[in-house]
Image (cartoon, rainbow over all chains, first blue to last red; front, top):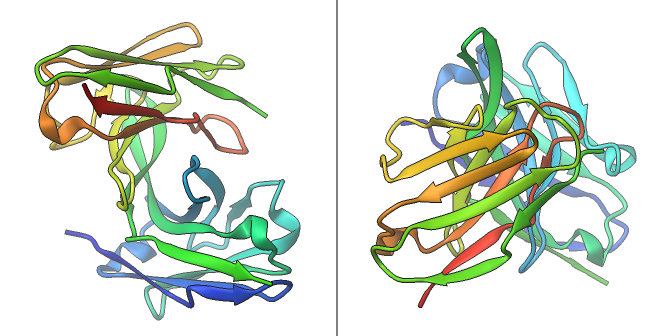
Length: 126
Length: 107
């Protein structure tokens, strides 16, 4: 069973850069069938898509966050990463990494976050 | 951007009940919709994609339907392990967006 293991600091100072890494337990990071994404959840609130990337270099960002976010996929390490700069208290959240699978169904491709990391609570301190 | 509006935001139900959760998209998203279940302090779990197709391993008491821009998740015969928060998510258009969630609590 695939596992996504997140790593990175749980405390970041305001105006600095949040950096998280997700390690993929199998070789699927090199597959054309998967994207690798980040989603966050402020305490007690709902889910917000940050972005996702493919090993080919295609990367998609939430426009509301795009100016501060960078996602990269490193197939040599079976890892993908999130960098979020100029953070403020509003960026305090649980950050999840997730695999976005491309699933064929009735002639269409459906893209679903089918495996998730354990989540990392990142607190931005002033 | 597409807004996903879930209702209700919370509900109380008993074991054995039939529960219905609705998600409305602000515009046509065809069947580009997924449902997720999230338990406290845990990552979301994929339940349904393509609006009505169950992920492998998801119990058959979960089902879903679609009518235009209205999507419904149904849990028949609610079990203790089903008490959780449920989210819909559209993946047809960028930016991807989630509904606000529906918390299913024990009555």
